[in-house]
Image 1: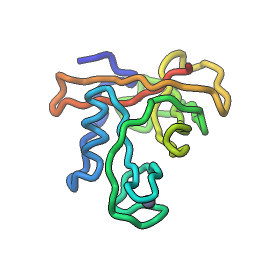
Image 2: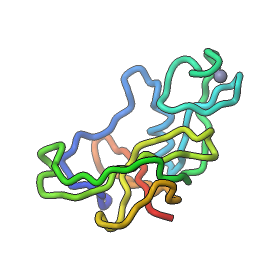
Image 3: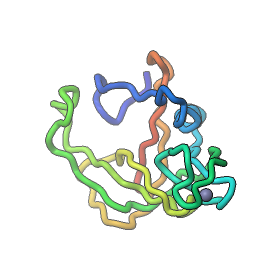
Length: 146
Ligand SMILES: [Zn+2]
C-alpha cells in the first residue's frame, strides 16, 4: 500500500454502479485527470452527468486536462468526520478551480503541513495517491501548493 495522506480505514472510493464516473477513476489509476467534456459546446463539466449542463447535449466524453489549479476555497478540518480519522487532524480540504478545464472545480486534500498558510488563489498541482494493493485498487487525486 502507498502512503496515504489520511489514515487508513476510510471507505474506499469506487466508480458509481451506473458507470458514469468510471473513466475518471480509471484515469486516476493511470496518473491522469480525465473530466467530462461536451462534444457539442466543447465545455468541460464536473461532476459527471448524463447531459451537458450548458447545451443539454448527450455527446459527453472524458478528456484529459492538466492537474493544475487554483485554490477556490479551503477548510482546515480539526474534528474527525469518520472514526478512522479520530487521531488525525488537522488536515486541509481544498476546492480547486481548473483554469484549463473551463474553471470547473474539484475537491481534494491539500498534502503537506496541515498548518501551512493558504490563501484563495494559491496555485496547486495534483498528486496522484495510488493504492494498488487495495481490493479493489484505487487512486486518489490530492493537491500540493505549487
Ligand atoms: Zn454542451
